[in-house]
Image (cartoon, rainbow, N blue to C red; front, side, top):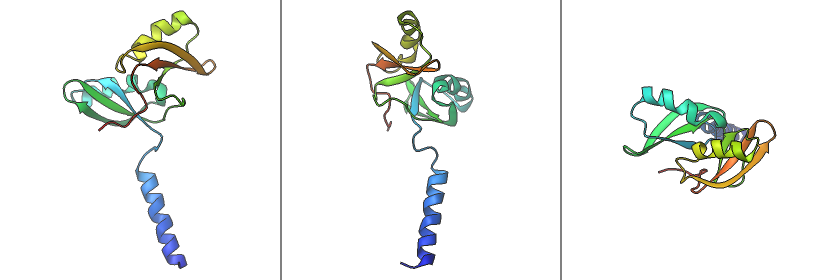
Amino acid sequence: MNIKKLAQIAVATFIVAFFSGNAFALDIKAGPIWSHSHAIQACPQATKHYGGWNGQWRTIEWGKMSVCGTNEGSTSSNPYDIHAGAIWSNADANAKCHAATQYYGGWNGQWTTTVWGSMSVCGANEIVDTIYP
């Protein structure tokens, strides 16, 4: 293969990688979103523990559920874990995990700290780290 062909492949690969966004980002459920102006209100809250909102959102079930794109992916190897910010105790987990897992079948009672002092995950009853149709 000649140098020109290799350069073309390298440029094409860079363009695809650059414009395809964060390969590790995921979509987080945010309840029904009715418009872009509504997404501007709902998505920053839904994605706050995933590096924030990347500006993308879409409806996955009309009138029931939309997802917001995140700037970061999951830091847990368990696809049922959802980020919940710092959790300091079981009582704190009880307060935070019910809200964090509300769109994922509720909290399964499990939680763990992934980054001391800044991030914990709550176990959900449905898979969090998934690709939605």
